[in-house]
Length: 119
Image (cartoon, rainbow, N blue to C red; front, side, top):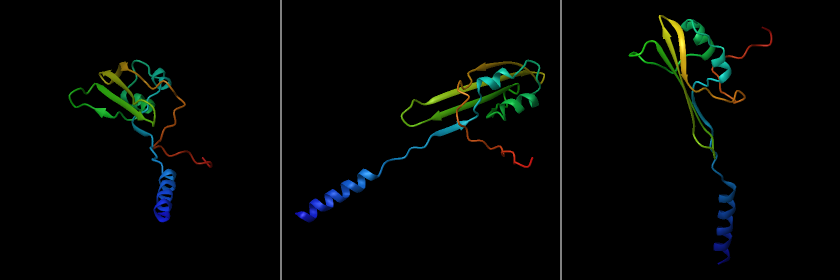
């Protein structure tokens, strides 16, 4: 009987020490309000791409529209989703539609190489 109680206590202690770790899942392009404010009508596609990054989707049926999507799932918070459409005419920015991420302080994983100290 003592062995069974000891095993139960040991298994309870081991199980209590284990917790499920859930990582934040971030997908797409983070486009902030500040980035959208930098866009000006008449900019060419290269200039827009320098500000917003490469669009997640370039629809072959809508060549004059770029789509930027962003989603974030953190533990214990609702799923967050944002999308922004950028429209061009004759290769120049005409307008945008959608929503940008409101919080610029959001930490973001980046593919960009950070500048070296000797540069």
